Image 1 (cartoon, rainbow, N blue to C red):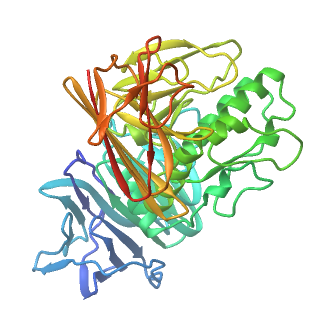
Image 2: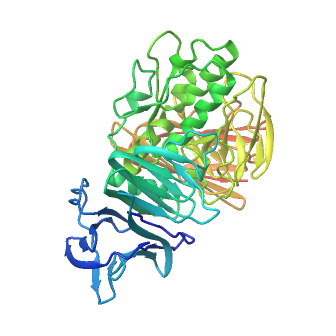
Image 3: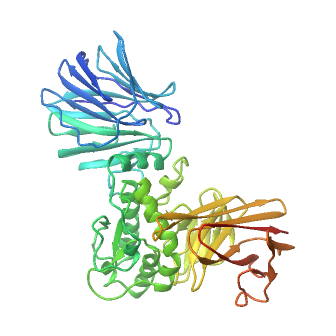
Length: 525
């Protein structure tokens, strides 16, 4: 069977499934959002999973595979005419041509893709007719590039998404061959099925996939150095890393796996045990920031102080991975899915939405990278850089080079307080997951001309220190109850005071928040 998807621009696009050889509809049954069709040469089924996703199954003489999915009922209308069967959800229209079995999928009035089903030499196949410049990501690709377009990969099951704005998940009792030159998915049997997800961005596609194929939650306790990976996590390859080339290959594999919807990758520190000292140092820098690390043998750990500082941030993204299916590790094609060159740097990645990590993967103390769009601050030096440019930074051992995009808030755990680092000039917010209460503390910040407003809605009794980067010395720092007093030094700060670091251009202010309270501080410059 051949199933072809002709992909147009996918922002507001449409999908069309058109048979290579005619396979007309003989009869149909419509029930609870599932359309079952008797065809001239077998059977087909379209089962709506959500308003933007559906399962497609096709057989040639064999019994249809039973649905493996559990989901809520989807409100879909069926329009049955002499020419076609049209199913309409809130966002998609899926149309089956009665004469030739063509399946067309549209978002609005634009076609997403066109699919054709056919039996080829006794095997079922699905063809996705991709545009010449369409990029494909996922399927645990093993090559040197993140874009797997043009590769031929065999998997028993696999997830991929494309730059055209849709994703596909296939699974089969027999291996499937994905020929991504021609967009063909071929089975060795006479049946095939897949899940199709529409989404303008990679995150939306992955969220749909998580809804259909959910993961169990990895709790915050798993942020400790573990003796073995959590059951919910997926260990990265445990081949020994002895060379820089092997280290770089590990980072590429990490990126390829997370593009394949592996949301909880786990790193075994034992793979670095036989490496030269310089590689071990860089591995420690990386693993101290890596969300899930374990040691299956040998000795050695991570930088405990760095890990403690970043635990609130990592805890929040562990929860988001469970809630929404977003990987904690985000290669640039996930975070910047609309950027045409997002796949050109397989050796760096985002950690959550805010932090760009650039592991050092060679000898020396420099790191060259091209920053994505936006403005970025080097977390280690507080230096600002414009995006869309190539930079080279000093990168001595001790901390992996990391950059935060301006317009974000970063929570870091201090010894007796929580630091909230805000990087203007855009407004920002951060929803910190509090495992003890199963709620979020909320932090907001926004500039307005010569004023700035920061706000905390805390779920816990906690001392907070706002650190506002790249600002001038303030004229006044005040809440409704009164003005804050200036401290002589950072060490001399206490709740209700502020201090300006003239060397860095950072304003520090401290307050003590009670549970369920809303604290707003206004700063005038």
